[in-house]
Image (cartoon, rainbow, N blue to C red; front, side, top):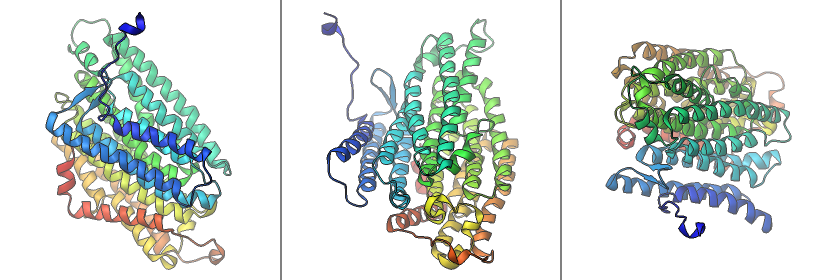
Length: 499
């Protein structure tokens, strides 16, 4: 009787097709590998890249539907289909595609080739897409855990390196605490609003803070805990302590994935929660976002200067970039009336896609220079690279200049966008701090360039393992360089596409 009367929500299968493709690709990769003879060389990487491409193409097709019919919710208001969600999904799919290409030679070089890491890429991407499209705090938490668990395993996936195991366990323990904070925040928001659906939360908490209500403290505590959980995922100060150890210990292609797809998913979720569920409380969380952004900009840039390992340098650089993205979030908090729209949101989305390509290209070079066992990722490992691999050194130079925000590169367009958004809402202090932090961070990138181009060779350099750049790695690096130069010189097309 109960089964006969039970009615589930309507499902638009085409609208959730990118999620289904990512899930199906991960399952097929694991099952097919277990039941078939050994796959040919490059097969795992190419299959993963093809799956990510298919999911990305389906997201592009959804874009046309949203333009024609507008944004809408899916599966009983659990997910939302709009341009920001699709933009994040496309960014994540691009990250999976490119990271799969740089992973192929790395795994075979390390003697750990197999389908597991590729399947985890796809599952992590699945969680990230769900996070960016969530319209319910419970659904958001499920996506967050799918992404996080996959990242924990990937960080510790290099069983031959103690640093990988150490990074994985640190990430798991600290990530568990952040998830607990986030889940407790959900419980408090539910207690104050009576629902976990973003639309119902927005309506339930619509009165101003000055009204006579008894649950204000409950909601404020919930918002604070949600911010703690999300700030951990984006590596914002003071919740960034896991970043240098995990970035250094994880396999370099996994580090590239965490810095690109992981950050895009986390910031997509942050925008969704703050702009969609809690716009009426922006006066309360905006100062907190402002303070976190200021700390993240300064601490990330300063701590990067004192590092000697390039992966740790780029880890703190990633923290600094998170501060820049938070500038856009802070600017969006000044204009909460139109959820997921405005210059602040657009600047964040544009920064995410540009930074994703930049950081993957940069870590692709680090993958090659790191040699077997990621044993040469300190500055000495880059010494003399320009003499032995001038094209590789030139590509790294372009990518580092782009991360520094030099004009005529994509990094300049990204940083200009978020700083302009801050100036438009009169957040002059954070804009000035961002520009000063960019100057400090430029010294970090200069140190790497000096090591590649100027530092003299030392005894024993000739006996080091030579740097190999396979074809797929060259494709990744050259594509990243081309993208940042094209965006830097002709930014109009990307700016017009950004939601």
